[in-house]
Length: 272
Image 1 (tube, rainbow, N blue to C red):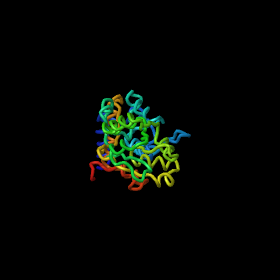
Image 2 (tube, rainbow, N blue to C red):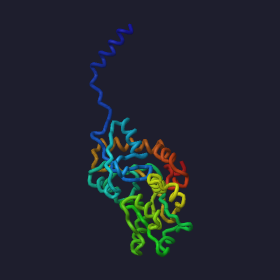
Image 3 (cartoon, one colour):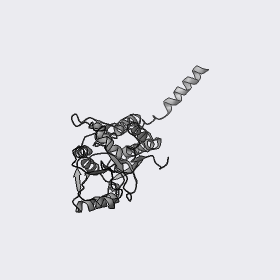
Image 4 (cartoon, rainbow, N blue to C red):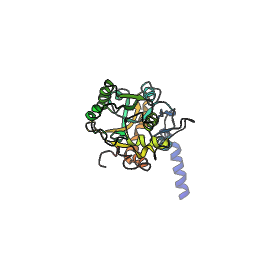
């Protein structure tokens, strides 16, 4: 009886149309890599890319049938690659209207950027920062924290108090040498940079992370290029949304940093 049933099942299966293969990306997905502290690391000598984002993308990609390649480029170049259709994802990005013109945004965690300095009495608002004589704010070219941030940079630039650099490592070196007064970025990005450069115990012990009142909190996430094939983009969005929902990105990052170093980041929705 069992043998007859098994044979019948096989016969029925043979009559059914073939089942489609599991969804998978049509080609390797390109993710430009630039230093984001522990979130994304780039070895300057070998070009090897690591960090929490690449690890999770590789892990989740294996489940979804997607592979990723990570060309190492400056942050400003990474955004240009996505805009021009030369890349599929840009990670660790804040949602801003300019980027919405060429990509789909998937929020991953909440973020509130910090003023970074060794000043024992740092400014606590944009007005306080603008009023300080003889200062210089160093910012990474290609970082964008939204309209209030850009407006602050424009006013600092008018006063000759702004300097753009290519990466957080440059800021850390200048701050260690006393040639940079302040920086502005996520606290864990800078803390990860100090760790990578061997400065966490020296410069890191003197660094303060200060909120600037009047610049609202935002989210940090991933942009998917509008020029990525639609089926691939849908698969990537599903994968990223699940990653955001399960909280693994923030949980892994927290393993590396103190609460002060993680003061920029919080789960979504806030209070979760």
